[in-house]
Length: 239
Image 1: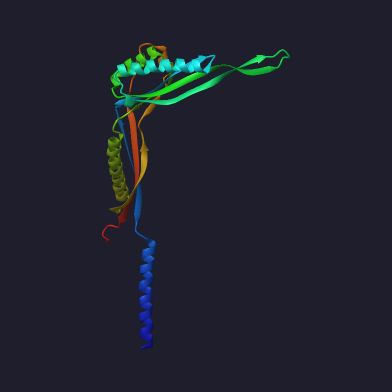
Image 2: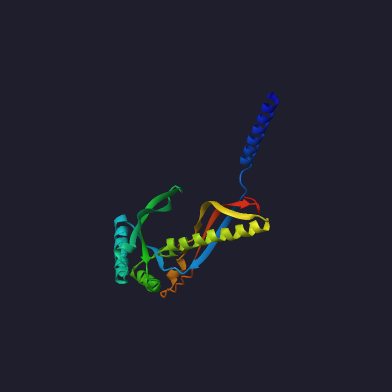
């Protein structure tokens, strides 16, 4: 009886040890990165422009800037730009420092004037109007361009599309790898988004101010997205 009890204990220990080892080994899995890219035509643009003026007195410089920016905003409204599509970005006034020689030969810095500026961001919803709008603001007194960027109104819809494409790309790759390894692809265990890139594309505008006729080509915007997907792997014929 004692011998049978010992053998039974050994069998129980062996079975339980085997279960622990199987759990420790864990399931066979594969991690695959899926990627997707697309290009879409932009349907809107944002211009960042400004007015700058210099004068001996700060009040005069700021008054000149205010008058010129008022004319620029009026021109934009005449071009069909609504108030909600215009936003002041910054207003500033800075001293102009100059150096002069004193009677004893030393260099002395002093304020000889002031530079005032007012910067405005303008959203253009009709790209066909972009060139004429730029011509209009130049004629109205805008003399400081900070940039131009193109974008799409519904970028979330573009991301939704390529997010699904990225998952499908991961499934395609996983099937290919499982087949090459002579394994069966099991269910998805997890999906992790890595996000993506794309959206407004900035463009410098310094060269644009040289021409009264403003040719602008919007081109296309590139979007991309990636995900990591964890799949189970099964040995063919085994559950």
